[in-house]
Length: 281
Ligand code: AMP
Image 1 (cartoon, rainbow, N blue to C red):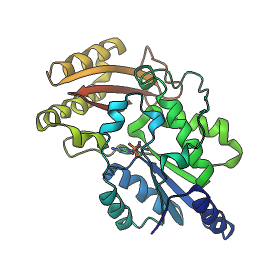
Image 2 (image 1 turned 90 degrees about the vertical axis):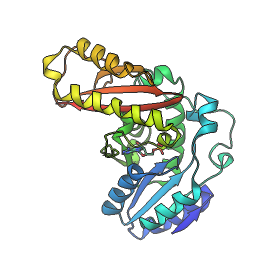
Image 3 (image 1 turned 180 degrees about the vertical axis):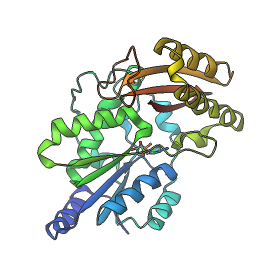
């Protein structure tokens, strides 16, 4: 496994290998790796000759400075996991390497970035697009792997890829959500939960699963009210939003269309903000 800190050196190495017909899969991460990240890496390994993982805690996607400061950093353990998984290249740049300039680019995602996460985390997706577009230019992968856990992020990345990288032909691969055995979606933020909040957090996915299964008995508005009410009945949890949206436009729907509709939620468990989603069929 080779670790790179500089864009120029990893770009050069990759282009030369690509000239020899080596295919590249790319898994961007912010570190504090868990089984969710590992599943993306395994998928990339199974579909490409070489796999590149980036570890970069991207400051421009944090609208809350406290959240950035508290973001878990576990570099040593991350590198061990990545090496055990057989990753070829790791890209771990400094902030100045990714953001040498002061002025940042403004993207236009036709409103995909202003609902749900975008409404409560203004500028978040512009920051995500900022970093992913820079990483795509540096790595120039054949395929890039993203988790459905960040459902809205996936929609934004797909649009960014189509709009800004159309001619580069990078294939975006969506990977299923990996969950703890009790159903909680794995997240780097879970380590910040107190034991009491960790126990409560299971109610998020369990409530989503319950209404995913019984969705045909309710209207969309009833589902939204019931999910929010049941989660907030736990004094350790506070729902920020629960929206039922069209998979492509991310616009709220009035009726569930099987296979085309997803329920997306953000919940505070104490001061830890968790997101999850379920697709309705
Ligand atoms: P992050 O390090 O949180 O930026 O996540 C890096 C990538 O891993 C993103 O594409 C996430 O969607 C994905 N990811 C994070 N958690 C999970 C999970 N529980 N299951 C599947 N993918 C995940």
